[in-house]
Image: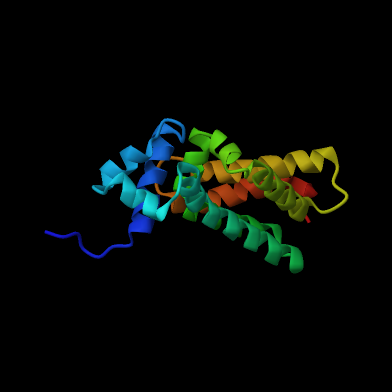
Length: 178
């Protein structure tokens, strides 16, 4: 019986993200991804030229959405709560990607995305505490953003953490938030 019509490219990304998150980027082979999907390695290579190309296909949508959130927020600044809620929602939408990155941070190095991720964290911090920021302001923003994104990786239903995570991030900002 032939396979039903599916979006093979998307299916490959989903399975690879799962495997990368569980085993790490380096320990996951394209053969494993193909076998799990019941396709040939050649079919996988038709969609992604390399493992790095596949990993980029997995993480790039999250990077693009964070970039859009930052661009919009820098153009017309929003209240810290709204910014944190927006960031939480983007990270939650890409929860598997965060698991993959936490499991094997080296994947960002393979994709030359570490600088981009650090850059977006700096931009988020600046939006939350304004300029000029003291070291204490910067520390509070770092704890707020890092803690917020870490809440997304907790076990359980991510929506159950949203309000508490945003409230905790705002508390971490304290009087240093705009």
